[in-house]
Image 1 (cartoon, rainbow, N blue to C red):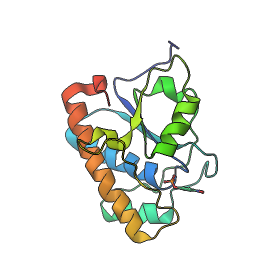
Image 2: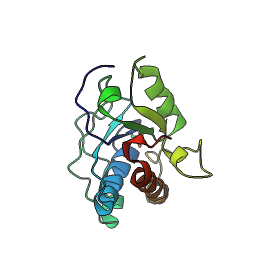
Image 3: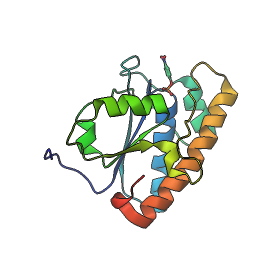
Image 4: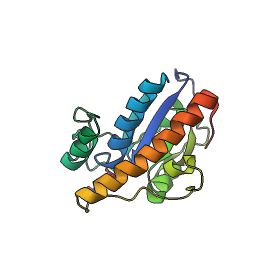
Length: 166
Ligand code: 4NP
């Protein structure tokens, strides 16, 4: 195993562009973890390079803000090999994103890689659909799905900490 410093729990969310879904779940999970007293490094990335350095989509910022979560300062970043050693958990938002993550996964990677909705009982294998070409209602639907997943993650990490597996 590569010897990178690793905090007890570190969670990375991955979508395609890192401007819609993954910044929303990054903000939602960070807020929920703080509320629950869970210490974690939290970040998000895209599998694609389209939006490196950009803030989240204005609709994602507005949706999160409507729920008291400010994600305006986040900036787009692309998944890199080191992420597989630095994070204990990597959650892909949809199956294409999961395939993109798996395609880059180093042989000796230590992170637990899964689909986000795998954390939710009865929802395993389900995607959080891409809202980029949708409208405001699609962003609200994403937020609702994210809340369900975040609640399940908080419960699992409260129970098992960084040993939680998905
Ligand atoms: P995200 O949404 O993966 O949830 O950030 C998208 C953002 C940008 C693009 C596609 C999806 N794009 O094609 O630029």
